[in-house]
Amino acid sequence: MEMHQTSHEPEFWSDVYEGRSIAIFNYHGCWHVYLDHVLQHNIVFATADRAIVWLTERIDQGVPSRLN
Image (cartoon, rainbow, N blue to C red; front, top):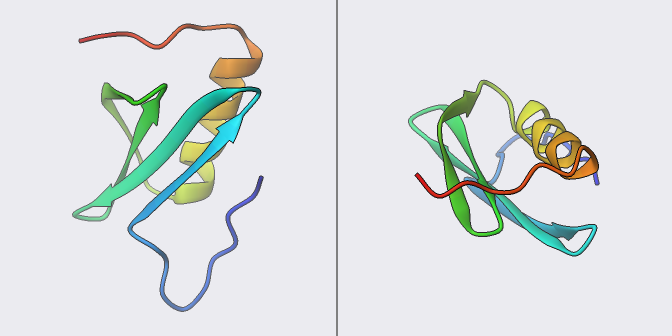
């Protein structure tokens, strides 16, 4: 589930991991993360790959999405 860098990275990416919806969105150079369609507030990443790793680790740890 690795997102490979190309000359033009997409601004949005989504998938399903272990039955849960994950997505990342690039806004002004920062990658924002969504878990189960819920934006994870105050959490941004410099790279898409790091954002995806963080999301999959949360799911592997059994952490629920939060509604803030």
